[in-house]
Amino acid sequence: MEFSIERMEKVAEILAEEIREKSASQPDIHEMEGMLRELVKEAARLGLQKAIEQGEERYPSQAVRCVCEKQPALVGKRTAVLWTVFGKVTYQRRYYHCPDCHQGHSPLDQTYGIRPGQVTSGLASLLGVLGVEVAFEEASQLAERFLLFKVSDNTVRKQTEGYGQAQAQAEKEWIRQAEDEKLLQMRQRRLEKRAGQVYASLDGAHVPLQEEWRELKTVCWYEVAPIHTSSPKSHHGQRVGEQSHLQAKNMKYYCDIQESEQFGRLVWATGLQNNVDAYAEIIFVCDGAAWIWRLVEQYFPQAVQIVDWYHASQYLTPIAEAAFGANTPAAQEWLTQTRTDLWEGRLQDVIQACRVLLRHPQAHSWAEKAMTYYTHNEKRMDYARFRQQGYLIGSGTIESACKQIAAARLKRSGARWTLAGVIATAKARAAWLSKSWDQLKPLYFNSSLTTYNL
Image (cartoon, rainbow, N blue to C red; front, top):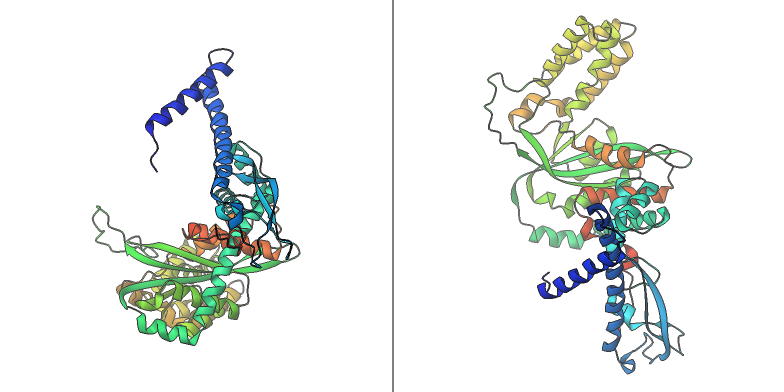
C-alpha cells in the first residue's frame, strides 16, 4: 500500500511538534519512542473512528431494506463500540428499526462487517496467535505490552477458541465431502496424478481436563526432501539411527479428542484435502499402536507402512539396563549389537537376542514386550530395505507435533481444560503451526448478515 509522501511528512511534523510540546525537558530516545507509540495509537484510533463515520454519507435512508422486504424507520444516531488493534473505537451511525419484524439495522455496520461490542478481525487474529503460543493470562499481559491497552485473558481465550472452532467447522465440511460418493466420483475423474511421495504420521498425547486426562490424537501430512550439504559424505555410510540427509517439510497438522474410528474420518478427509491420493506413493511412519495401523489399513490400504525407527529401537534400552545394569559396558555392547541388527533389517536376530534374556528375571517382562511388538510389526520394520528405497524411517515429525501442540501449550503447569476449550485451542494451534492461520475466519465473523440495497 502506497501513501502520499507529502501527507506523511505533514503527519510526521505534527507528531514531532506534539512530542516537543509535551516534553518538559530534552527527552532521550526511549522517552520519545514511548510517547510516539502512544500518539500514533491515539491518532490511529481517532482516524479509524472518522473513517467509519464518513461512510454514512454513502447510504441514503430511503435505500435501506429489511430482510422482510419492508422499509425500516430511521430511529436516529446511535453510538457503537468496536475493539481494534488501536484500542476502543466509539463511533456514531444511523440506526433503523423495522415496525413489522422489529429487527434493528445499521447499514454502516453491515457494510464494514462490524459487530458492535466485538473485536475486529485484525485484533482477533493477533490475540488468537498469542493464545496458541502461551497461556491466556500471559497472552493478556503480552497483548497489553504490545498494544498499549489492556485485554482480558477471557477475551484472548475467546478469540483463540474462535479460530479453533473455525478450523473444526472447516474439517466438518471436509469430512462431509470426503464421504459423499458423488463428490468422490467427480474428484477421481478430475484428479491429476503426480509423481513423488507424500508422508503421514499419527500419534496421540494425553492432555489434562478438569477431572481426567484424555488422548489428543494428531495426524501430520508432510513431504520429505533431501538436504544438500557442501560437506563430503562419510565413506563409512550412515550411522545407526541417523538419516541426516533427509528432512520433513510442508507439515500440515490436524488433531481432535475422539475415538479412533471417528478420528479415522478426519485422517481420510484431511488426506483428500491435501490431495494425497494424487501422489504416486503414500508412506505412513508411525509407532506400533494397533489403532493407528487399523486406520491405515482401512483408509489407505496401498500405503507403505513403516514403524518409526525411534519407537522400535527404544524397546531395547530397558532390556539392556534390566539385564546388565544401566550404563555398564555389557549393556552398551548388547544394545549396540541389537540396534545395529535392527537398523540393518535383521529383525529375527533382534528377536532371538530378546528371547535369550527371557530367562533373566529382571529383563523378562521387557524382553517379552519387545518380542511381541517386533513380531506384530515385522513387515513394517524392514529398515535396510526401506532405507535402500530412500524412505524416511524416523523423522520424529509426529513426535514434534505432539510436543508442540500438547506438551508446549496444553500441558502447561496448572492447566485444566474443558473438553470444548482444549479441542478448540489444539485445533487453533495446529492451524498456526500448519501455516494455514490466515485461511481461517472465526465463526462470529462469518455470520450470515442482512443484505441491503445500498
